[in-house]
Image (cartoon, rainbow, N blue to C red; front, top):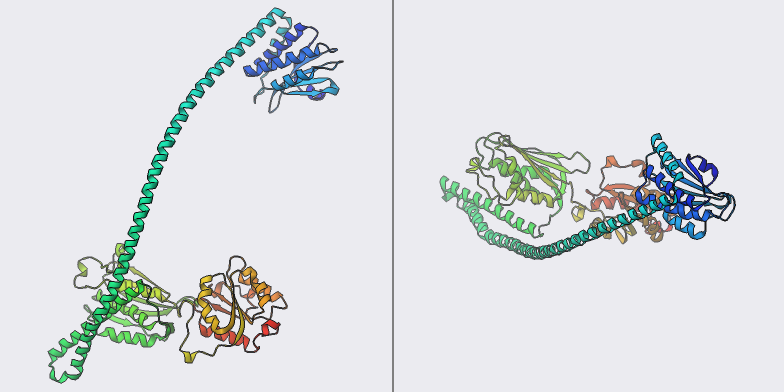
Length: 596
């Protein structure tokens, strides 16, 4: 510590060290100054002890002096500077002993030792400084006896404080032991409770497993029961319907009007029962996963006309009017399933509409790939809000006095929704008591992935030697793979877009089928990489995506030879895309880097 740093301190007192009595004064002065400035008692004794140890070593030096000062700032300090003119200064042992008690800074070249005692965060007021100076000056006239008594008093006080600390430590240790015993007991209790809980969880899990197994078995039994009952019912019901028709066709002349009416009722009731049996059988197949759509082109004009004719003879309640809109749309779907969906919805609406209108409208979706929307609306009694979810449970029927005379199986809506989902669509319902019901069926214009017309309508697939499919969706790759196998001798699948360019460079395919949205690298970036590479830019790329066309970045798709939608992707579309871009090149042209 240099003199300039020491000079920044506010001086409090200075004294010279010449005799042993001065050492006693130094000790008392250090302790009193620290006490007056608010230093804790133990730190007072440490400071006084360090000063006395260093001061004794300075008695052998020439002109030793000690100055007390106050350093203000964020951390106020009591600074004691010890200087001497000649001599080696304090010994190594004294310096080490003092350094263990208080911070000591040693500047040998300047023959100065600086001891700094922190005071805390508050700067002493001027009155405290004056009191400190008075206390320091009062010690200059003390005798050796007084200093000895003071040291003895300090020692007794330190011993008393040490004894009190030992007693406090002993008390704390006892409390800690008691706390530890309580913690161990609590831990033991909690461990036992946790173990008991775990045993209960294991038992509950085993019970749940058993219940799940029983439920699976019950569901399988129910499905088998439905299927068996349906099969057993079909034979007698078919016989009833057939015999009724035979009577009407061949014995009509021998029947009077009443007999013909009764037999017609038998035939109509048998047909209705046969339809219910078919639905029950379909529900059983759907639950067991054995009901699959039979995809084929559907002429909606003919289908709607058939529905209109079938439901004209339905026994209407009151004066309700049935309106089935016209439609020239042609879609690819399962005609039988679609007919059953619409017939169930219309017959259900007619059953609960005494007056007003039951209407079927057909529109196209708002987007290019949204397919077709069937809407069945009525002006009937409506369905309470709290029961609008339950009506999609099998065999559930809405309760209430207004339902009398309108019995049913409770399979209509659940069956229609299940069929709509099998066709890749959805069925939603909105209703309010007294304001009628509106059921909306949204179906894709084709099957979820691919649709193909009759074999004679399909163009012959082109011969593609090698095709690379870049798509991170493993399910889509697995679904489309059987079709691609018809279009290419070899199909190479790439599940990571980052590897697309290297794979294309390695196998040199005749075409690339590329998805746009992938996690590691999107299709736009892959398309740009292929376009920049002179060796790969000639390979035709066909983009397939599930995104709306309006959201596509068309300026980044200029290198793509075609952009097809996944949800409406068909075999004829793929065949046409490959034909258009490969018929001008021989197989393998892409591998040679030639133009397609």
